[in-house]
Every structure is written in structure tokens, then in C-alpha cells.
Length: 509
Ligand code: GLN
Image (tube, rainbow, N blue to C red):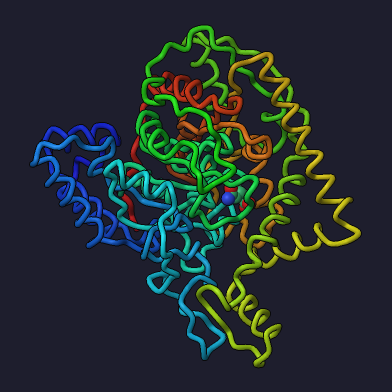
């Protein structure tokens, strides 16, 4: 097996090859770093840490040589979404405000290498490192995870390897591109309202948004704390299962992490899904869905049926309120979470006129991008006296209705199958000046986030090439009750056997 070829393989095969000594961890990590370098133009990574990564890989190889038992991800290169803290490694959340201060100017340094270096690692980072995984770099994203196209990155957009004139989706766009282009076999993203599932769908990768509380958020730069969840991207379902198993579990450092035992998700891959009741929500096939997406999802549903699943039409009547509800709750929480970026404690500082208030406003004015400012303003408004009841409180009540809607559906069915995104990857620049159109692209992923349930996206039949575009990926979204990830993995794995992972054509950028 050549070193370049190794990265075409899924996570579990790479780990296996390293454990058996067929390839060394150093060789795999070098192949990954090489690929990242060669595909810089895709914009998948903000920073890489080659020395640190090779050092970890050498440790793995040495442990193997000594005959020690290796972790389940030993030697496997992984990319982390930028807001996932890694001790001493730049962490910017793709924002100017977390780049190092040039205290005498009003313009921050635009260099992610100069980013804030956290003095500690996120729980997920530590867990990955304990399992022997090798963090090769930090992935590009929309600033503070706000966006659906990766174009809100303060640095540069990420490009879709299937068609580099198109977006890979967002906000975890870089994490998705890194896996789709086989720069790494797996990565972590965060999903607040779809930021793992939508880019997974648009890049032909597997992306999992775990149940709220399944994975510790300790060390994740917060966007909307009641919605944020970290989850894996991988080239295949079993790879994603292995990574989730590694990062999941209760954590004393995150009070919202759940004390629920972590099952063996990998063992769920391969289990029969005969008799599984699959709900098909009518509301996810309404106006706005692109015909090629509907066609592919309907085909995927027939495939599930031929695998022995029982399809049942269901209703999720709250779906039409998802965009309005989410953009109240998420903006409210972000206005509060982002208050900490004030020019005093982290990163960039613009001096203002010498008093504290003008230091705050000069720093925040120059440090945040347009979308982040828009959301802070919206969030401050919906939380303000007089409007709190009408907007924020109301949205929280509607959120309960989402949960009830799903609870009722899960009385009838085991899982719900639907599209993850209403369209295939759209053109870079197409929606940047139309925030509402961008928000509407999230309509199929927001409900599961609002209800806190488990969901994933697995590639189904792509949209065939037309005069306007090459072949483009489409993702089937599977949703299940809280802590039902095993069921989702079983269904996704069985489906994947009928629709194996595809790799994008050699990139032209
Ligand atoms: N696209 C949604 C937003 O812009 C979701 C983002 C996310 O999940 N982080 O808020």
C-alpha cells in the first residue's frame, strides 16, 4: 500500500494498518500533512501543527515497537474545527477578534497563526489524544460558527472539492472539506443548527450531530450554549462511529454533559435494520426543495424499504417555525456568550479614545465581522426589556413544541428520514448578501437542534452532472430520539452498503 493511498481508506482501516505495522503512524501523518499542503487552495485548514503532529505520531510508533496496546485511533490524523481548544495551538473561531492584538492600530492582524492560544485543551481534544489520534490542524469555518457557507470566515472561504466554485456548506465547512478531499479521514465539527449535517450533505461525507449532552462542550468556544454539540465527520459511517465513541460521555467539567453510558457505536454498524419503522415527514418535502434532492431522497427511502424498513408518512407541523425560533434563541445566546470578547481578556484590542467604553466599542467594531454583529444586535434586541417576553420567552415556549412534535412522532416510528439540505452545494457568493436566504437553507437541520435529539447525514445518490455543474453530493438525514445514536448508525451503515462513499474528482484549484 502506498502512503498516498492510505488516506483513501476509512478511519478504522487506517488504525488497523498502523496497529498491524503495515504502515507507520509517521508515514500516515506525513501523507496527511502533504495532502493538506498540496490542497491549500481548498481553504480547509486555518493552521496546521506539523511538528506537534509528527511528535505524537513518533510516540505511537514507539509504543507499537515496544509492544504496548494502542488506542482505537492511534496514529489517525484528525482535523479539529477551530473553536475546539487545543493547548497552545491557535484558536480563532475564524474571527479577527481572537487574533493577536496589534494594540496600536484599529485593524487586527489577519493571520490565524497569531491566534489566541488557549492554556488548556477541550475535553474532546484530550480524549482524542488519549486514544492516540493525531491532531494535524485546525479547520476553517464561519466566524463563531455563524453561517451556512463558510464565507463568514474572517480569513478565507473553504471551497467544495466537488466543484471549487461552490460552497462546502457551513459553518464547519473546513472540517467537511478536509474529509471530503481525503486530507484526513476524520475531523470534528460543531453543530448548533446544522453546521455538521449540512456541510456533510454538501460534500458527500458522513456527519453526526449527537444528542445534546452526549459530548462534552468543555473547551468549545461557545456560540449558543443550549444548542451547541461537537460531533464527527468521517469518510464512512463506521469511522464516524469510532470517533463518536471516543469523544462521547459525561464530563465533570461540563454540567450539561449527560450521565448516560456510551454504547459501542461501531458494533451498531452491521446490525440488521429489518422491521425498523422509518418516519417520512411531509413537511420536509414541501416548497423550496430542489427536484434533484427530492428525487435522490425518495430513492434512498425506497432503498431503506428494500432493506426491510417500514416507511410511514408522518407530520412535523412545527417545521415551518424552525427558522424564526432558532434565529431568536441562537442570537440571544450568542449576544450573551460573545460579550466576553471585549479587548481586555482575549486577542485583539483597539484602543479607542482612551476610556473603557470606547475601547470596547472600537475593539468589537473592528474585531467582529458583519454577520456576527448582526446577530449580536438581533440577540440583544430580543433579550431587551419589553421585548424579552414577546420574542425570547415566546421562542423558548415554541421550542418545547418542537420537542413535543418529535416525541409524538417517535411514539410511531423509530427514526425519521429526510433531506439534510433543500439544495445541493450553492455557488460561492450566491447568498452572501442575502442573510434570509442563507438562514432558510437551514430549515431541515434546525428542528433536531431545537429539540436536542440525535441526527446525522449520510451520502445518498448524488445529483448527476448537468451543463451547469459536475456531479454533486446529497445527504440523507436520519433523526432519532435523544441517545438513539446506535439506531442511526445501524440504519446509516446498512444504507451505506447500497451507496458506498465516493471521492471527489482530482481538484482543479
Ligand atoms: N447555519 C446556522 C447558523 O448560521 C447553523 C450554524 C451552526 O450550526 N453552527 O446559525
